[in-house]
Length: 328
Image 1 (spheres, rainbow, N blue to C red):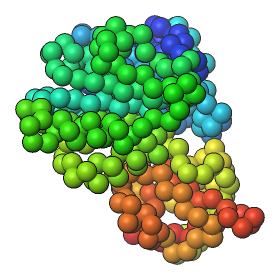
Image 2 (cartoon, rainbow, N blue to C red):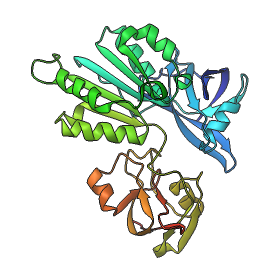
Image 3 (tube, rainbow, N blue to C red):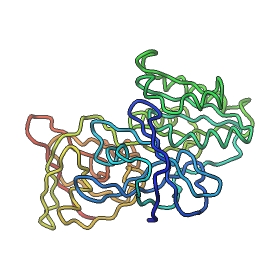
Image 4 (tube, helix red, strand yellow):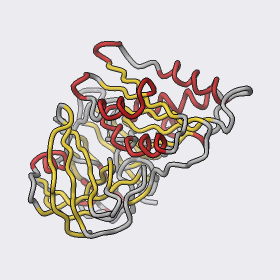
């Protein structure tokens, strides 16, 4: 971590706060990069990861944009409380979602605040004259962060889809468009897709991608948030072999609850992508709400493993849900 100072803090959409951090010179963030920010919550000092929307050429400034929601676990509230002049701690840019240059066409798909991971990609591709389309799906127009900037940059190739105006986004139609461009007689150099959004969007894209026989290597994604199929509920987590039993609140992740109870677990991404925190499931009362993109659909349906950084359990019979785990 390195010291940084807030030099800009303003709203760029309903509930979305842009914060620019000034720090010691370093290598500028490349498209797809994120940084880790030390945040102060009711649980104490924690670390959150945020996409770098843009960065200065000299590597002294990095901008993030953060959505505040009723289910924000403290990081969002902390970032929204920052004002110009505040001192914070952040990491150097970290890369986990790199842009690969050289494809014939690029399809970028953002779900809500997931657009923050794709803005820099769109700018880089546009500056190189690449064939790029960005579809941005939002629930309401007021939540469309960076819409004006992207429309000015891409023109008609920025396509904003507003659920409460247009109905639900048609993932199948987009994937049909990608498949047509990627097939025989399509775009020379092929098509690459970069997707950032909630797990439901990611799951729909991944299933449709596989169904159309598109190359797995040309679909790149980053989950944003850990939205699942059920609203967060409290549940009990146990690891009998070490005598651990703890309650997981609706605003706490399973990983955080296990750590606070004394479990020493491996983890990295905290977004359900790397699989390092995967544990075996011994039994479950309720239904597993898999919120990761690491386990395959078949593995999730089997219910024998879970990524504890994002996944939860939801009650189905009126009784509090319980998850019993085994250490690797």
